[in-house]
Amino acid sequence: MKKKRLCYISRNYRGVNGSGNKAKTDNEETLRGLQAHNLGLPTTYYNSKILTFFLDLAGILKTICTIRRGDLIVLQYPIKKYFAFICRFAKLRGASTIALIHDLGSMRRKRLGVKQEIDRLMCADYVIASNETMKQWLHTKGYKHPLGSLSLFDYRSHTIHQKQTTLTDYPRVIYAGALAERKNSFLRLMSQQAQNYQLVIYGNKNGLPGLADSKHVKIEGFMASEDFIEHVDGHFGLVWDGADTRTCSGAFGEYLRWNSPHKVSFYLRAGLPIIIWRQAALANVVQEEGIGICIDSLEELNDILPSITAVQYDEMKKQVYRVSEQLRNGHYFTKALQEAINQLTK
Image (tube, rainbow, N blue to C red; front, top):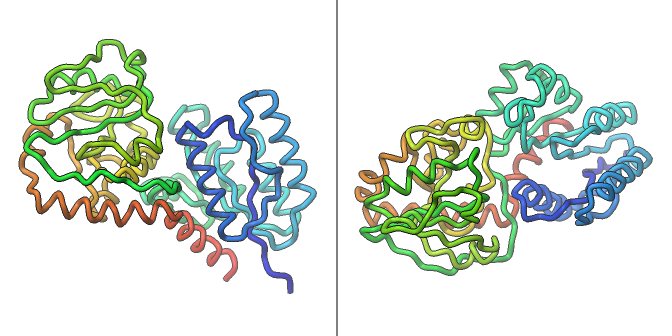
């Protein structure tokens, strides 16, 4: 009997600066390390939308010609236009599909109804949800095939954080990301509320008018991800979205209840313990792994941060470095994938 092949379909990525593409190319690196077979075309990085369309289409056409009976095909969801087609064709050829969820359209952009998305995901034989909360949501909404969960998105790179940071009486809270009114306007309010800590923002302040350096706020501008990982000088990395400091609000804020932000992995790779909304899907992971603190409101930070002892902070840092090394080596995707393979081959 032929050994079952682990397979995936590479594509054209229009740059890897975005967190979504970085996560997907990292997963492809993990798959290659597991000796997985690329059914599509070689990975490319052209910026043209038209070229992307034709390259991805050519990759799908190549895929349907090369699928073998017994193949286990990993799909990084969502795949525009082709997801259900690939799953159904694979089934016809006697192959199985494993879908790893990066985003749910019914939650993030509301372009799909919940039933429509569940029906689409039911085309796969196994789904790896982004985290345990999303896994339970999929189950309650009607997904009936086997389900697993990822927990954290890996962040592969050879860069190691070099800065040795000890807790001070005036800790630096880092926020890094693309700044935009609809996603992180809470930063304006936070900059007015900060007293017992310094808020350090990495991003283009032109995306969020009204931000300015002050006694408790420092705006550093954009920093390349590898430079950030190696050199950022801070004590905590903040994961928060919306317009309010009392809770995460709006579409982006509410989405934290379900998704696994790549920003969490990015901060951990940079040696930063996490500050995260207590109702976020990854709050349990942060708490269980001992890699940060969970809060209900940003207004709590003026009281919480001074109460953290040097011993507590050093223990957080120790756990952060442990998890960071796992992220660097593709641990979380490898573990979730092995569970999927075990389920589909037993």
